[in-house]
Image (cartoon, rainbow, N blue to C red; front, side, top):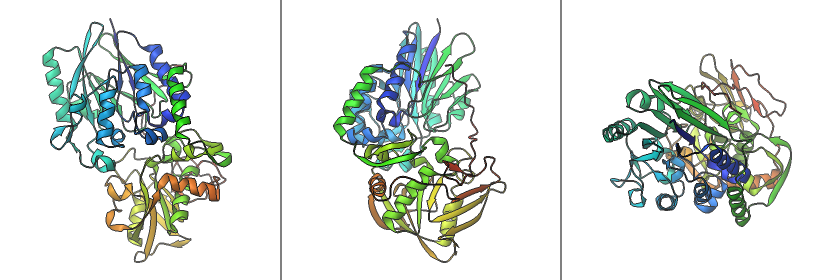
Length: 480
């Protein structure tokens, strides 16, 4: 009898769209049987609007209905603090596995039932499952800064050896990180189910199959072990039946949160996909960066692409909840003071070719008050202008951005806490007030020009400009 794995990950703000999370539950239920292991790979409780309101407890409605077998911690699962996550571990039906996350010298979550690894019985099969989390978690998640996250490969290797000694039929890794290939190449495992990076893929490394679903509940992967060659299929969620119990529970939570106040009516929908955020200048990026500069009177507004969460376009009646979902983090806007030379370094670090984050083709910066010309062929910064004038290396400039960028070395390392000169309101509150005052109608203006990039620039109000659609990953065809 064949073993099947069903893999979802990075559900994040799907909870803010009750029909979408209902369809993910429906897609799972349609394909699950007694020989199936249902696994999540982190960031399945946060971020999102309802996650902010409920401290991640909105995920319990979903978990109770689909009854997962296993999950592991993503960095955003720590968004609401250690105690909040412990409560979720204790109250959710699945076994949480985490072999490389520690707090105060103890394995995190052990007191709430988390294990380094577990064995799941699926029909006649015994499946060993181990979980690991990205070591960058303490530096990219402010509420997790006290964690110790050890190297994942030794943790997986040790767990896999113990599981093989127990005689399990398969070893599966739940990996919320961006180094799945090394785990597969260096450890004795049969599958690495990935998360964290929001680009889909299916691959083979040695004898192991690797999968990573789309974020926000848009896809589900099915891995089948039947003979020597495992097979992986992508299932789109958009056409799946809606689990009405899940959808109704999330609708009730949205109503109780009272976030449906309309702040503006948008005639031209503002796209907010992962691809739009990382291709270069975009309308949604310009809107966010403009709001930061408006609130601070800084010379430059800066928003990191990864901080803009994918979701439905901003269209028609735009509510408070819609704007919170764009940047759903309880972090303030800060004003940083930098030299012209430092500002040029910040702009240089916007290119994925200069930072080890995501894909080389990604663009990580949305700006207001500045114009950036990047030579893609030479991987070099050509020009930076502020208020129409070239940046002077010895001059001083102010930059309004999220506090997060002052505390991480993974994005814009030229910025750090020493540059802070002012702290303002929470970033999504700034978006709401800006929308009320100025409306939501951003345009493409040529703020970012990426020379030598295949996709032609757009300056007539389209959603992206000077951008490349390539991500360097293989996206398998849908099966439906």
